[in-house]
Length: 501
Image (cartoon, rainbow, N blue to C red; front, side, top):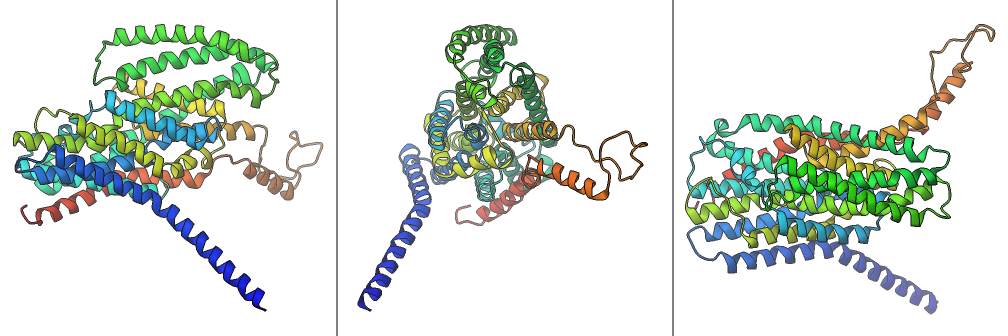
């Protein structure tokens, strides 16, 4: 009897220890995020402690750090998700590569699009004091961060660029009315809701089709891989060289289009030449199976995702610290919406480090959603997604079309998924129910209604894309701008009522 009571007590202690461990794990990430926000606060106090707007700059620095955490938690998953889903990278490996490359891109080449966030969304009719302009940017940054935080909690990959746009527009309307919004710019952003995922999906499906025709569907896949995989690598190196020149490094280098094309051509030749011996060393003894041949795409895929992360850090750091850079410029000059918006290193550091920290602490959930729960990935499909994202951004930039990297990547994942589904369902037909005499009927399909139902169930089993994710993600995309705009307007109104405002 005593032994039974002791066992019960020990079980209670074990349950308490398990619950305590689980709770500590759940609190670890928010606790570390809080430490980062505190560090940003201290950093801002020591860096910008003088002037009449010092307290507003310090508050904005904390808000921007919060936004950087959310950019890392939500946006970065689109680059790393397919590689994790395709088993090319472990979660730890993906987080490590993305954190380093995102921070490097932000610190080395970030900030060129700060002017878009701070000035192009609002017209010259915006007549505000420097104080009210700072409040507009604070409200915009906080609202966009809150929306991205909610989207991440709901497992919805959204465009952080669109979130910031909505925040700036909503706070601007609350401050000075609808006339101050540059509506043509907003129109192009709305257009990107359709353009980005469609372009990404079509191009990813096209690339995967080419991979099947040239390698995966060939009788001797190993020989085909020796011939065609270097071509894919050459295409990748050429595309990413142009991508980095046009997008990732544009803060420190502004080459002419002829220079970009020449760089792409030279890089493609170098990549092709380097891939030839690399592939030749790995094909002897390789089994003539799709799974084994797909493994040859693993290293190119890892390089592609690393380059995408670098370019993403360079471009999207502005979503985290663009409003803060505008606030610092306004506080230093005393002018609302200053024409020149420099990007101090301490501001850039908050964005770059915050993106890396947010990715490490909160990124795995969305990485798993993007890489594993929409459709099944392997190395080839993930490679096509990464390459299509870079190509789509390049083509859209050349044509002047507004696109979202988030929408492109997610659209590309759906594109390869629906292509898989199409190939899987090829040959399965459901003709109209009509019972004919065997000698009259020319097609060998449904004899009875039961056969038709069985055939329909067979098609249902081949649905290789989870539709519920498509509807949920699309809904989140559509409401991103209006939701962040509404919250920003409310926050600006609330900030005006604060003491000293």
